[in-house]
Length: 150
Image 1: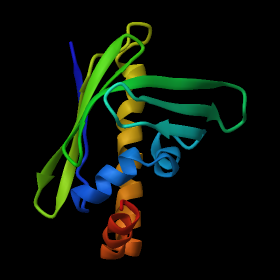
Image 2: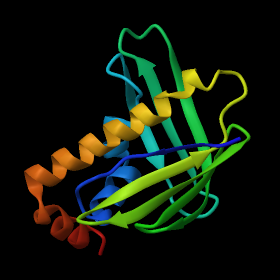
Image 3: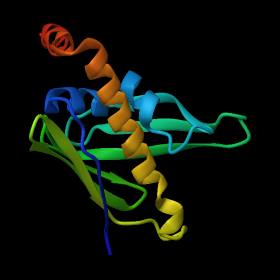
Image 4: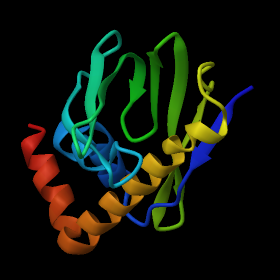
C-alpha cells in the first residue's frame, strides 16, 4: 500500500523546487508541527547523493535524523529517493499559476497510518513557506536564483 500526499502552491515550479532542495529552506518546513523543528539539513541532489535532516522537539526532549539517498532528480519535475528501506517519488505537477507537489510513498511499518500524517503536515508547511517567500519577493527570487546558479 502507498500513501500519497499533495498540496497546491501558488508560485512557479522553480520556487517550489528551490524551497524543496535548499538546506536553509528545508530547515523551515521539514518538521510536522510547531513543537518540532529541523536544526540542520543537507541535500546532494546527484544520483547516489545523500540527504539528511536533524529534527528535534523544541523542548529538546527528543531528536532524530531523517537520512536517505537520492536515486534520480529532474529539476522542477521529480525527485526519487530512498530512506529507511523505503522509497518515495516527489513530483512537481504544473497547475494553473502554480505547482502541485505530490509524493506517493510506502508507509513505515513501525507506526500506524494515522501516526504518519506528519508527512502531509510537513508538505503543508512547505506550501506555506513557498507561498510566503513568493508573496514577499516575487519574481526577484527567480532572478536571484538564476544568478546564483551560474
